[in-house]
Length: 360
Image 1 (tube, helix red, strand yellow):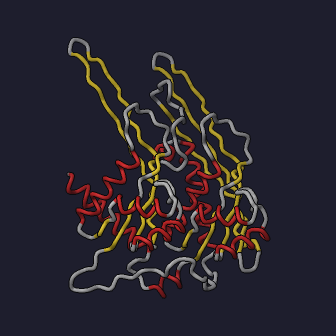
Image 2 (cartoon, rainbow, N blue to C red; image 1 turned 90 degrees about the vertical axis):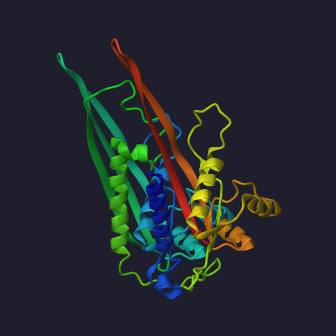
Image 3 (cartoon, rainbow, N blue to C red; image 1 turned 45 degrees about the horizontal axis):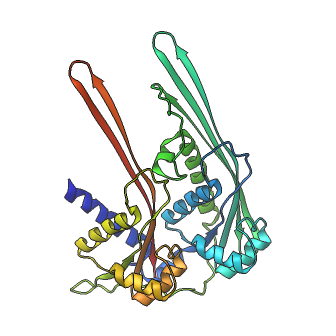
């Protein structure tokens, strides 16, 4: 089973490498990919949640994932976008019109700019009691998005998308926390399993489909690269190893453990071990990475965007840079007593990772 899991992980990494264009000729990749920037969505609904959600960031992050996985787009990292906004004395909510989007988009070297609003985010529970049986609950959730797609070259709104996702879910077995959303990260697997997550995912997927459809005939204007041109690997009798660096993962879940765990270091260390054992990669030692970060006055959390990863990656002489987040890290025990026998416990554990692979 362990060998099978490792094989699946390596196959998944190979598919990521393939999708990233490492094994595609530079001319073909440039001809196919459209460079696009996605702003955090403005939230126009009155917050009813008490959890520390950044709904605008979460929804735009879900859309970024959909666009990247489509294989049609090169998506600008948020940190690169934030840097341009800071230089232009704009906050992240500062792009609300096509003219500003076009100006910032030209500075980023993108063809398309996406900005939008979360116009609806609701879930309504209804509990119904059944005599002698118990009760069940129906949960109805909705998410509404209003999105503008701007052609940076012309400054014209190509399309205005208004998409809604809806989901109903029935719970036959009720517990005290059946509808609890605390501890969920928007876009994480637990959120996706919830009715509100399914409704949000449906709305985001509809927006992504609309963007794909409207950009299908777009003529891609050549963009002056801001980083080193794409690296290609020339097949030889002895395959050349890819040189790769892995950053400690950022942990965005609220710590529930009291032990002195460094979860980000631990998870990235596990990934390093898998990559080394695959025989495909030369992985940079953490000490070498830490030395470069120290020389560049960066902490280990300092590489969170593609532009910085590219700069540090060139100093390290690597082709690929991996950084990511631990979005879910939970375990839920449930003890059940059996009369005259004793008891047993069921333990359910989950781990969610959000990873970016950057071609330096």
